[in-house]
Image (cartoon, rainbow, N blue to C red; front, top):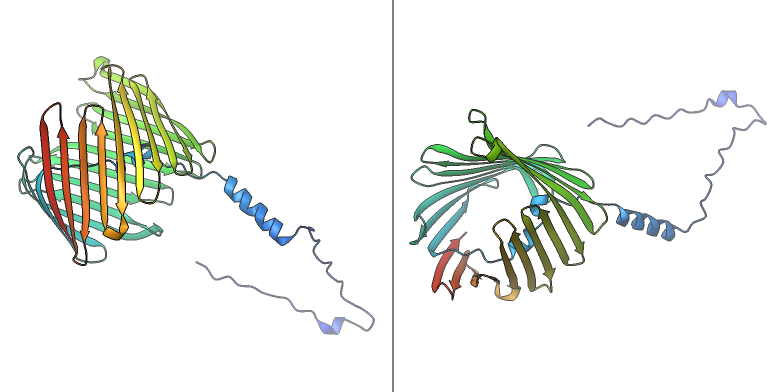
Length: 337
């Protein structure tokens, strides 16, 4: 940041004789418009400006976030902040359907800020005693370019990698994702996404998925899909339409305490379709949040989260059942910190 230096030139009084006057500067012409009207027009012009529509990956996020994310068995999670930027997590999970045991997690948040609630880089990792590791790195390179890297190790082998770059323009977003790029094996997946804000409510775009490798029929395949989102007030319609099927979701914020979401996923090749209804109920006075969902396959799920004030504890009770399959899963978790 450089300093702004302002200089003014004075008038030599010895060169101004009697009867001589300096030329007067004419006043600036007035527009004749009231100040309130000018401010109203400027505010209206700002409202008409298109904003960034987000990414294609976030199209159905509102509907997915309010659905119940169930778990089974007993779970204890202890979170401890070691500093303003570093936090560690200890998790013990005990159940019969998935691998049980202890997992250690760490989170680092940098000091580079582009917004009031965002700081970069962000490093997330979780590992178990067998050495299985999940790691994620998120970094905002510029005010418009964000990169994400995810990797997974199992049995000391790299089994999955994914690199994503999002460029957020003023009224559009371009994303490029590469999954499991195998240079030696000659295989991988490349996904290119584009989302454009057409109006303040409507955003349209497309998604191109390209997969190549020796196990792919014809060694390569490409699928082009259309995406769109229509948002008005507290309602959001989102859709993905491609040759293999479509994914449609609807989100509605009914009140400050109730949110509802419905989504339909159809696979034309397998001749299958699934509809899911999800909802979230918030009771701030009781520090309670309940998320529930039911789908067309008669899976009923619910998760109750209760903050145990004034202690830094949170209790979570999870349940999932299916009457047709005669199955029931129950989970209980305690989060400390």
